[in-house]
Amino acid sequence: MTVSARVLGQTMPLQYRSKCPVNYALETFGDMWSLLIIRDIIRYEKRTYGEFLSSDEKISTNILADRLSRLVQVGILKKMPDKIDKRKDIYKLTQKGIDLYPMMLEMIVWGVKYGKDIDEFYKASIPRIKKNKEAYIRERLDEITEFSISD
Image (cartoon, rainbow, N blue to C red):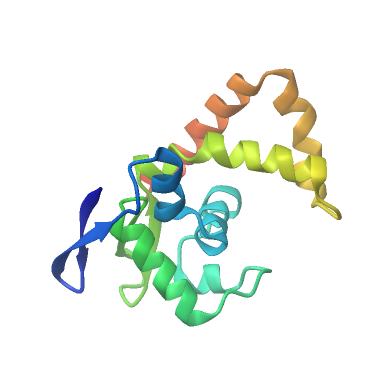
């Protein structure tokens, strides 16, 4: 499968290894750093390169720049100049990025169940998620969408 993306002002095809939807998802956003950037936007409402760089996982500058560019290319993030500080760019989720939230929530549930030394915030959310997962997802999607469309 071939999809086109703008790279350095030119349209470049993005080649996918197969027509499998799992492969498509993994090749689009499936590395650790891309998912953590998406997590930072959803959980911590981060928007700028500097905010992403300050995450606990200590992403290197070259990998961060590459992943942000890739997420913009594939339509998961949109990049725009900061209205307050024109020297900065801000990144927001597109609808395609927002639609990843239910999958991210399943990763959270799995990580709390099997992980060690997990943040209490995540542990505390599990009873509410288990009580009514669909309502929890709808509520969070509303919050994420509002943050993604706000200035």
